[in-house]
Image (cartoon, rainbow, N blue to C red):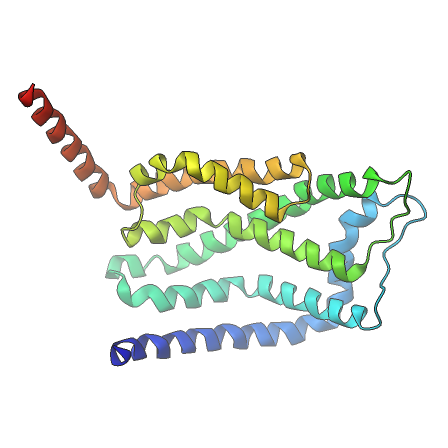
Length: 255
């Protein structure tokens, strides 16, 4: 069994090595401009901070580790196309020749969907959510947010939304593997709604507005995923329809 897995493990190590190598180079290149990137990150917070409030740090090592977090997250975003490319190269041996040609569309679509999710979070969810959180107790408390905690929360939100917007891309691969069909996704819809709202509650600030701002697009993307599964495996759907028709005919004959 190990002999069968060995080529796959070697290929996985190769693809991970390339991805981490590129990420490593991007990290050191971006470390010189981490302050500029951080300024962009804290802009939504500064826009909602009351007068007299400011961003602070409470631990001696906090600025340095914040710089590392900012740089690593930025390097990850920059290298996304290469990471997706390496992922495709890893799964490509199990695909047909015509499917292997989809590498460029896959890289473009996967990167675009992640960036679209991150942009939706930055320009819509974060301003509304942070405005609620900062001003909720503004009359009683003075806001002095810690830069380390803010960056951690910020990157968690952007990564969560970016990953959530990959749902149609993930569905594409599951449909290719035969793990899901459009019919199975439709039947699972009621449970998917519950899971979507649970994920939204975990990834967003504790207010209903931002939770709905995440759950809403995810529900739409789930609908898009159903269409993707239908396009990827139309023959499976046709087989299911024919089987349903046969079962209906049998039931009518029995009656």
